[in-house]
Image (cartoon, rainbow, N blue to C red; front, side, top):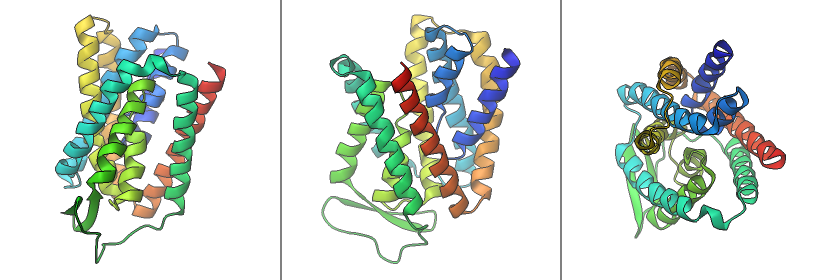
Length: 262
């Protein structure tokens, strides 16, 4: 069983680290399906999300693709939303929320697929509440009146469902704010790593961590995160967009299946 677990975790970490995700949508159900108790699967998943995110981030950072300022702004309100979502999740039917989240993710993937790959912008939107960014040789604009409530809502859904907020923050960055796909993936890897870190610390305090399992799989996803981020940097923007779209559709369908069967 350990060999199967290692192979699956490696494959997931390579695929999702390349597009700036941590694998949280897959790690828990895979570990549970392989026979691990849910609380062990949950804490191990958070550890793997942290390791995958930071592993990919280290490579993206060396390539100069991580927009730190954008990450701080988006992650702050996402974390606040996740906290509120965790507190109030019991008020909503998890199945309904999960189906809505999955459908929105698939629609976002379709929109990303239909959108043309942007070259460097000659002009970007300006005005009150619009944060103009010039980064990695490109320019884009973040409308704070959209970013703040949108990232809070994404965080709320993530906290209520226990899934990674990066699933919707990447489409938000790319489709709404015009952030290049590669920068969005790199910046998301930092946010994913931080999310996994804070969640894992909470689990670690309660003492429900299977350290031999977490550390052994952690070594696997470190390698996967490095490989996935290297591939992401090497491929074209068009190929990266196809990779991201396919992953989002796959995750959305996976979540729909889970919502229907459980």
